[in-house]
Image (cartoon, rainbow, N blue to C red; front, top):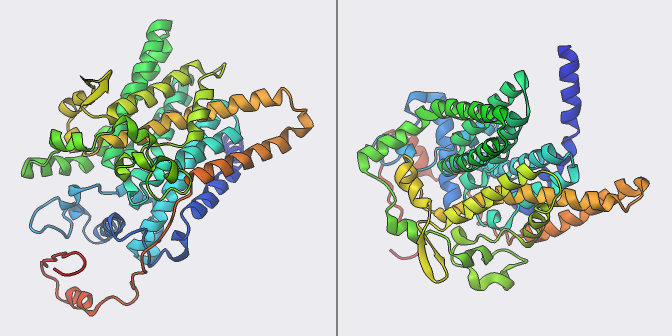
Length: 470
């Protein structure tokens, strides 16, 4: 019986490999020429350098002194200096084989970026396929999600690109609500694992995932209350327990952040939060390197953090998804994610009919421990992609079902291939980005000063002075 079970699941998994291959190919193409020289070149010598150092430090600490992993070799003599930013433990776990074989942080960071695109798209594919059973809908929804213009604006931000876990959280949560017995418990375990991995991958999306779970849990609770569905209420309680367990396991990785707050009193003031909040016009803004939309929407652009236009295709398809005759519960959940994320992206206040009105962001800012570390509420605009991607998948499924009523069965496979090719072309054009990489870094021949410092270990002061005359 066990052999039959694993054989059956193995065959089902193999059927998803073509979709995974598509995401691998698109990730290489749409980030090209990043893959041409991943050992010596990063997307820029800004945030990616810091992220490569973080991953390299994690590997160094794990292999030398795991107990001191948060006491990184910066800002001496302060403690817990790794907690001054995202620790990227989740990303490090995914590239452990690369680090074990090469020890190269630049290579590991570049592979992490590619994996973030591949896995984000594949995760959305799995969510949509689980809802609809439609592979074409899953693939196109995954592409619309992973390569949305608002995500491509964050090529420098690995912790924001790593958006593969929220769709898996939703998938497992959905399965918890429709399964029974041992199957339901297994899916609850999957939910806990996905939430745990999200917590290891970035503080921003950990908090964003908490907010998403609050929204989704609230919608499920309303359905249970209105329909008097006792089993649904029990499923939500089980899911809440699974997430609480995962949250408890994350405490050792979160406690250093609390210690940093206790030691230095670091938190984001309201003025800074207001500055980095979204405006309505930001949802029509794309960053300057987008090839398709820049000339059309450049008047709205302020900063990459506030370039929140998700692409025209995903908006249209999500609208079609709302008209799907099935998936009533899923539609409300996905729509609630979109609406909640957009509202929270505006920060403390929003403008309605020329009047400023208070928004629920303050509830999380004042009531959720650690939430005051969030600098950029506009990043909630990325969370809206989770709901938009799912709704777009439902929209594609509806269009496909309508088309199948008019297409003879013998032509449906060919029509599906054509539809997939057309969709990939449109979404790929929306994602096209001007990729100009900096000059390679000669990591194989580092300056002699680094060899000297390695031979004379001691606290070192480095004073970055910028470029040009100082």
